[in-house]
Image (cartoon, rainbow, N blue to C red):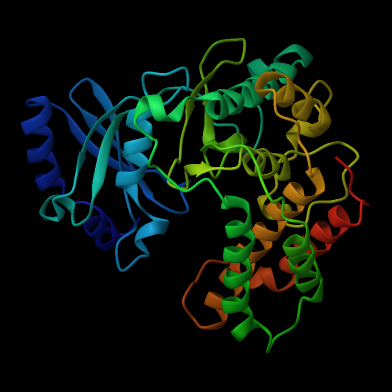
Length: 353
C-alpha cells in the first residue's frame, strides 16, 4: 500500500487519540491494512496487548448503501450475544474528523479463513465433512434468529426481497451494458434475466440474511476439529429471503462432478476433495436445521450466478471507461459470458444441484 493511500485510509495520530480515549493508553501501536478485502477496508491494529480490527469504507465518493459500516456495526452488535459467532464489536464512530469516514472497532479473532486451501490439520475426511457442516449450521443459526428480539425488527423490508433482488441486478446489468455492448453482447444474461422475472417466488420466509455468506467470509478456530468462530462482512445484511443466502453460498461450493469454473482465477476448488460434503448434502442439512425446504432451487442458484455475472459486467464497464487498473477487470470480457452460460445451464436443468 502506498503511503498516500495509507494516509487516505487512516490518520494514525487521530486514531491513537480516539483509542486512548476509549481504551486507555497503550505502549505498543501499529496499523496494517488487510489486503484480502474488496469492498470495505479492514485495518489490523495492535493496541498494547490487544489486537483490534477497524472497518471503514474505501476513501473517496462511494454509494452509502454499498459501504455502510455503521449498518454492519449495528447488526454485528445486535447478534454478538446470540449463538451467531461474530467478533466482539467495541464501538462505532460517526465523527469524520478522526479518520475521514464512519468506522467501527472490534476485537480481532485468531484462526483460519479458508480461501485458497485447507489447513494441514483439516486435511482428512472427518475434518472436511465438519467444515461443510459448521458452515451450514451457522447459516441456519442466522436464519433461525428471532431478529425482533435483538432489536432488528426494522432492519429491512423482508416482503418482496426476492423480486427486488431480480429487479436490482437487472438494473445493474442494464447500466453495464450501456457501455459493454460496444465490445460484445451476452444474450444468455438477457434470457436468464427474463426467466428469473417469470419465476421469482411470490412469497418466502422472512429472516435475517447475511447477504454475502460463503466459505471465505467465515473463520475457523485453531483447534484440530473445525469450529466456526466468526462470521464477517455483514455490510449486505438485511431482512429477507433465507433461500437467497443458501443459493449464494452454494454458488461458491464445488462438487467433483462440476464443469470447469467460469472464473478459474477466483474459484476455490479444494472442497472437491474426498470427504467434503456435496451441495445436495449441504442443502439437506440446512433444511433439517431450519425446517424450511429449498423450494425453487434452480431459481435461487441461477439468481446467485446472475448476480456474479452482473458484478463482473460492472467491473468490465469500469475497465472500458478507464476507471480501474485491476488486472481482473479486462478478463471479464470472456468470464462474464462463461458465468452467463453457467446460469443458463442451471435454468435449463443441465447443472443440477
